[in-house]
Image (cartoon, rainbow over the protein chains, first blue to last red):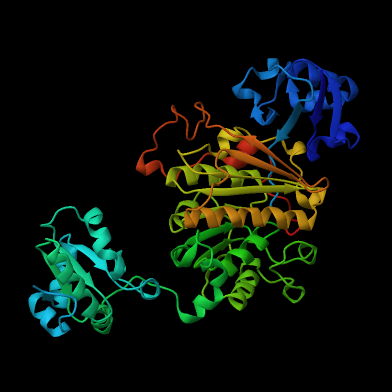
Length: 91
Length: 396
């Protein structure tokens, strides 16, 4: 399944500036693994021992996967996976 | 049998005419108070607790409004002619307990008794584009004029928010910022000016706001928000707008606003992107439901270190002002339960759902009750966030 993974500004140093990455995967975990294969530096930034680090929110079709099946959340063709850490900037 | 053609003095002889003092007692003891004047007169000023039913509509609406024929009803108009005629008509309809305020609202105001504040002629002109909107009207504008909004930061977000809330007639704007205007701020912090570099941001913002709208009272908090002062500062405000530039302040604000049950309009910006949501304690999620823990410092760059598109900051600040107007006037649908992302490079908005987290340590079902004596005690947020509290001033 063709999935678009969206990378926020503060993680783009690990993707060479890419904000959207096209991958294949049938779950969020598979899609993220496919991203990590291309951009190894991203893995340790947002995961720890195979699970998402707590400050990272991941959304599929506008829903937080925390309230679904986590990394096992199923994906449909064309889904958009949004990775979103908190941002503090206001000035 | 009385008719509408009776000379008004004959009508008044049949009606119970209340002195101002008697009327105040009747109102205080629960009489149904009805203003029978026209809309524009009501808009000018009216008595607190009154219902507005123009005289032409009263006979048709009274049975719905007051089904009991014995209920005490007090009518008033500008003097007392219209209200006396209407009282006469109500008595003919079988209402047995109707009275009129002698001298009407004219006598009331001449005696220096309070009326519900309303728009001055200058305000009617200034806010006419608001009052023309049926969703806002004079009533909504009065709510704005009576509202108190606290802005955290007079920076990239707070500057446009403050300008537009001031223009909208928010009556009291508090501004918390301990920084001074720097030349590098002027690319986006539009409330400040070139000749005010080096001036405290709160003073600079106050100067701009007062030149824009004399209706607005600006309260300066030229300080840094911390656990020792936050409850006292927040307590006086209806809505808090979070444009802080660091995580410790954002978590402190969340925890304090949940304790005080104050709504927070929260936005953040970085590079070309912004996010915004509205947190209404116990009604919707809080900041910690969305972000239980902050990112480590290396993943939390500041605008000073990373850069930020000034126009994008303006868009986000105005989305915050838009949320404030809705919260104050009660119209529309806020961003409670929704996180809106804005990507300025592609001009795309994305909406994400934010749910209340039952496990939230602050507003969740199992969150500990906070005893009154512990209200002002907060954890060490700088330790919690694992970072220095803020970047060196004035790089923000």
